[in-house]
Length: 287
Image 1: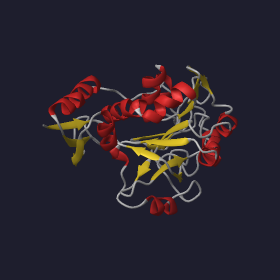
Image 2 (image 1 turned 90 degrees about the vertical axis):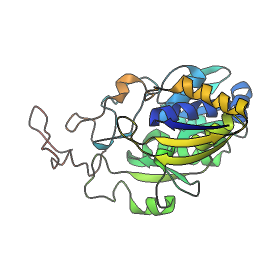
Image 3 (image 1 turned 90 degrees about the horizontal axis):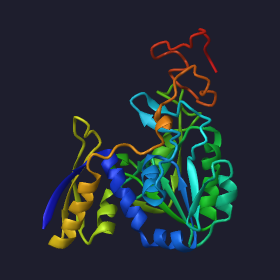
Image 4 (image 1 turned 120 degrees about the horizontal axis):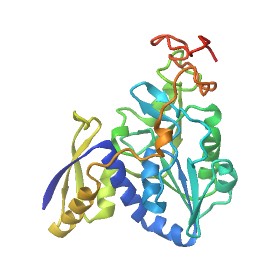
């Protein structure tokens, strides 16, 4: 049996979340180990699957560019650690918590770019990547299983190596939003293709990308396999149709120039006043 399916970006994230939550290594870590969820909209969808709450969203890409949250001091968690059936906010101690992780534990993280070879990378806009960025070295060094959850809308035409060389927080003179660098990630990449195969014994072939009227960035696939397996997929897809972006709602409001949250944002065209001349009500500018 064959089924042709189109998923919007939020629907694809919901599909990936269901697949990652069902992985054997994730189920084992839930029972006998630790799982670190590093915030992002795809990982927030995974958090909703595993612990029933969305995560606070920090950096994001919107029509204005690479921006961050309007509210920077929200206590809702961006990153959480799940252990012994409970979760806790580790935003202020993520490096210390990651250092305690090891074999059998799982780190789940998103990506901003993936390439044709399975490479992945995450954008960094804060100095040193902030606390999560500083924890990346420990994530790689201590030996937990790294799962990279990313939709195919993040696929770039070149390689991750080329992309890393082309950017940097201090590498752009002007940026729509904050200038960012890219940090390569190494782990098990789960896109829509892998998600379908995790959830059922099927083959997934991507046949198109993009769309209009809310389907911008969407992925169209053909899924094929035994009737019972394809019907499993159709039931999952039916359950996620209409999904919206996952994230703690107040954190989905994005930053604006001159709001006092932009001190570490480099080369931002809005701060420089070169994109519409944005100013605060006091008329003050600059960082």
